[in-house]
Amino acid sequence: MLEYFNPRTAYESLQAFLAQGGPVLVAIMVLSFIMWGFILERIMFWTTAADGVIRRTKRSWEAWPDHTSWYGHAYRERLLSEAKQEASRFNSVIKILVAVTPLLGLLGTVTGMVFVFDIMAITGSSNARLMASGISRATIPTMAGLFTSVSGVMFTYWFDQFVQRHQAKLHDELDKGDL
Image 1 (cartoon, helix red, strand yellow):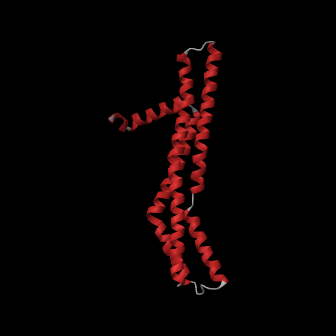
Image 2 (cartoon, rainbow, N blue to C red):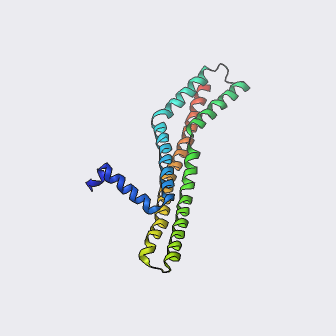
């Protein structure tokens, strides 16, 4: 087990895994890294900067001279909209990546099965040993696409809940300033 902590062994194992899954698995891996980069960015936002957005919005609202006119209400709506936009940044990108990765997994299934049929056509037999590489090329991308998608679905749900709570809290904070 400790040999996998050796960077060379880990790199060779990753290369072998990607070779078994075919070229579609590389695309799934790249999209997975991109998706997790966005997820980590959102986690950092919610743990470090979300309260700062509320404070900044509240300060801007308190500095506005007129809270009762049409312009005051329009300015308040603008502040709420900007805060919501900042809170939900990259959520749609993560949702798109969650939706695309299982489709890429299905594409890997199709390309793997085409590989199996090519082997059967070239050899003229249905030898199980010859078809095994095509079957793994068909199943590994499906598994990787579904795993990536399921891991991202949890975070999209949580981030949507965080945005709703953030907006409710901000709404309450701005309403307190009106009294």
